[in-house]
Image 1 (cartoon, helix red, strand yellow):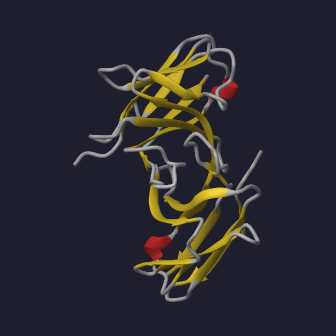
Image 2 (image 1 turned 120 degrees about the vertical axis):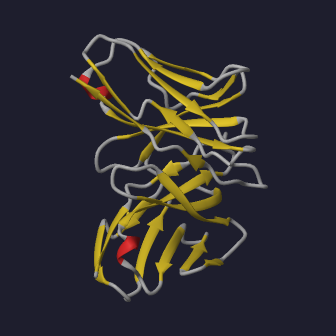
Length: 112
Length: 118
């Protein structure tokens, strides 16, 4: 069954604005990861947050995790046209064998 | 430090033919995962392998699909007697250790193989 569900499905903003994407999941997890995929390309790992962490930063990225609500958010600050891509959250289920469960993604468009 | 490599990048097959997709993990990685992505969808897990062992194939269709990761050489995802519904992008990922463990870990993805079945 689908684990991660991103919201919104699509987001269009102007360069310089912040972009916030949300992810909800259903079962207990070991960690949650965010990936970026440019059109027709492979996935690029952005950031991993463990189940015992609440917030993590990496450059212009800020990820939060609320295990009580089974949700996470990805904030991209001061967006650039090059941030245009699809963003996926992926969860590593607790007790799982190693597979990640992906949502359908948020398609972000940053207009110059 | 080469990343995960997949070949071919694009593969066209006619219905009933066989498709072989190859994945070479990052150097030092012994865990390989295969995922399938349909257009406008997220990735769906298919199979998780370590060298010479299938650890989890719960996402793999029971028929026509098989995967291996031999002691030497790349991991192979094999699809026999392809049908149009097999058309998708197939991604391979690798990690140095099990992703779900408490030590956790990132999976590093290859560029994918786009399979088109005519």
